[in-house]
Image 1 (cartoon, rainbow, N blue to C red):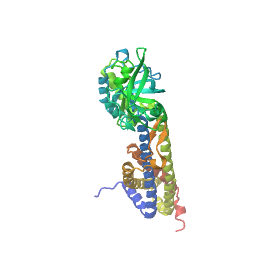
Image 2: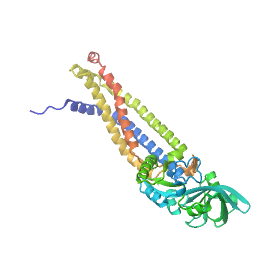
Image 3: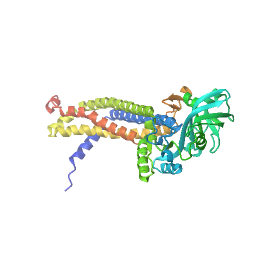
Image 4: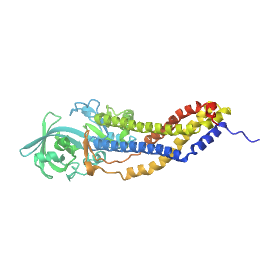
Length: 426
């Protein structure tokens, strides 16, 4: 005796056959869902790419994506609030431990200060940052390619200044300027520094009042021992994971028993406006994707409702033969689910080459609009799509849910068909 086939498998086969009875309608409906999926993953990819570019521009320029300070360093940012306090720290050890943390790519020690920059009769108030040039170039990109000259060298009395500051002081690369800054011993430090180069970010405040020196030179100017630093800046593999990496770093440093407190702070804290914009942009992005699938629900439901109306006599016959109403409804839902799976397969096939092209050959709109300055960052309007697992997965789930929801009302209408009324005119 042959084994009895499962009844549900029969209804799946029936749903599959019903779906392809009108191939043109099925093709149009599946295409609409597939292009809805394409639109969703493309919007999410481009949004993530633009946001990544904005975050990179806002953090890679100067701040870094993760900073380690003494817990009470902010908001005053006092010259005396150094890591480890008056005793200082083993700078190399902290940098090494930071770099060894999973998710962190590079780390660099820093010292911050402020004072006056003078040349001849011109004086400009400025902020100074002392860095290790060899490590800093791995964390931020301000030292990578100055507009003029070169980055300052370790151990040299050199300074990299913005072009705006250079114009106000009337200096060129190779000229000397006088730096005056409060020192940790209560005196005023002052010395001559040669302008090694100039940067031009397009940000007026940064270009007009910021200077970068070798960390030892700034420590000497401010009468600070080499064990005193204000922060260690780091860059991470994925900017979106910076808060989690910061938590992991705090746990790892606490476990090592450094003997002094530290507080890792991700860019979402010290670039709060940028983080808020990212959250807002993400919400708007998913609202747009939601609208796309809501529109698809009405289109698919209309198509399936029409198909249900055309097959009302068939539904009446199977009902008259004793089929349970639930199985009739389930058949229509199966059709919607199969339609969603087919549309998803087509959507993935057309999305892969589109996303590949947008990732590797993105349209560059900077020639038309120029660089955009916003929220403390300068970024190029390049429509690069960034790959992420959550975007395609969420869109796929949304497409399948859309297909099922679209079939619910047609399934309800199929159940409500009365065999006597549907077969009365035969």
